[in-house]
Length: 321
Image (cartoon, rainbow, N blue to C red; front, side, top):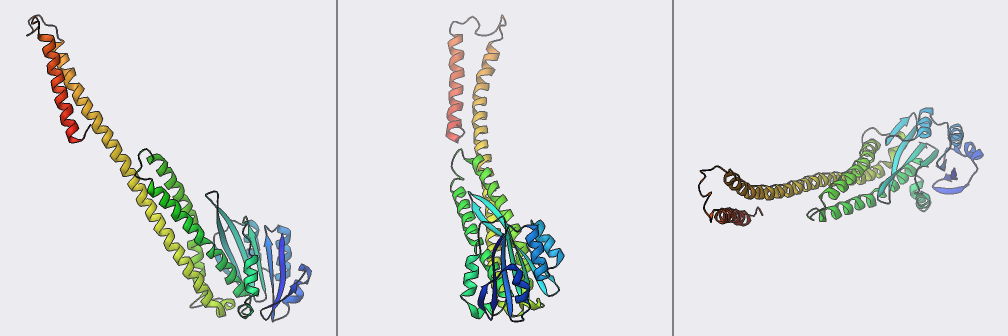
């Protein structure tokens, strides 16, 4: 679906234009057209391919979607795949923003995302001195907006981890904690798979050999890289903390099991004594000592109770009971 189609000249908005007039404006060397699509249909992409002469491989990637974050160079144009991330009911909703950039055009197509970019367009229009840098600055502005939206997700993941950590030493919550930690680890790994490839791609847009479109905007892409590096560092820290928390939680489970085993062993030792005495005195041989003694039964019971009581005292003192 077409969101807007606007022509710009010298950093200033000329007007909203119909799709049919795009080719007229892109023919001017000092103009560029910025088109925004949402959940584009194949027919719309084919129309834009015709208007902007987009590379067929880039259009095919945009049509199929679910691409790895990347920035590819096709002759004098760029094709960028950036993933949007938002937390909905505690789960990551991952969308995709495909951006085609040429000397005199920008085409952005977002899919599976509720987050719009009207604010990015407004920001660019309020900074004509930067918009004069052309289509590459629009690519930076879109990329910067997506990356800035990563920070609240990182904060939410850190808060969730802190909540789980507070419950690690609570009795009876070990299983629930492990399940939540593994769910959190899955989300962190999903997030990391979006950030790391994008960071590698953005690093090619500043310093050294960069695409001709980005020569005048290298400093801005370096800023995006710095943000991605901070996010990547935070993700790695969260991941390491999760691994530590899982080990601590498993250690707590092992300690609890050890405590249970010690109690069972202590009670087994106590009952083993009683069983041994009962087994010996239960052998009804005719010449067995104390068999005819009238105090034999209470004495036997007293001995068994005394030994069991002593063992109970010793185990209790040592912390096994």
